[in-house]
Length: 362
Ligand code: SF4
Image (cartoon, rainbow, N blue to C red; front, side, top):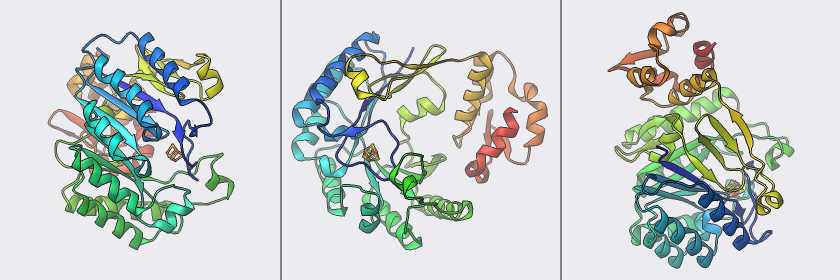
């Protein structure tokens, strides 16, 4: 049974300098028309009643919808999927207000992922973000006041003009915020983004590594457990929805550019809003071979500090992992471990997992 649904809301007030997500400027297309197509796409998925455990509304900027638009979306989801246990919405601080947060609470949103990126306002301007520190403080108070206290703060490290002082201040903010979850992603310079066009070179490998290690150590001191390469939480507050991806379980998805995994099929909807509004979803379709499925399972699960259960692997692929991969495991034996029936990378090597995985699956 599929237990997770991802929904994409592509509207953004500004286009951030590093962003290559599927998005359009707020108001450049009819929000109402988009929501109508989106809801009919969800209807067509024919999701069985009471099957969903998690919904994640991402973007773009879901909180950029007006109160009425948000009501249309959230009321539909709340009434159709009452069994949902974790209901997350991504929000940008500047687009939240008291009315929207009350509505979110009433319609079952119980987890918010807030885009902070950094507390250094001069860097926020370089990134073309449209919020400032006051917006973040106000959004956090509002969410807590209305009873939504399962909050993730989203940060980026390796930013232009950042220094160890920037990280110190970002981490100090996390410490004082009392938030249950925090993500620190490294800045990626993707083709077509403003930073790419400005020929921004980013940090060296060693500098990224240094910043990452600093973040990881400080968060550990504060009681945040790293459970995935870039994700840290207080005990019991790991993102259930995102664990669906890393455990390589199936999920539905709807919206512009949204990616789903159903049966053996991975689909990605069109990123053209004009096509999407005509219900021409033109999904890019990958049908997984048994080998693809196994590779994906390993690559995703080994992002997790816990790794994967050898028994679960055997149930899914009908073979014993340790004997099937005996030769490859020998090549990477210094970096991996078997503990309590789980196979995982040793903690200190999770950051450099790509090269280890390559040896393991080749
Ligand atoms: S708000 Fe998010 S989705 Fe929108 S442009 Fe910025 S990074 Fe991209």
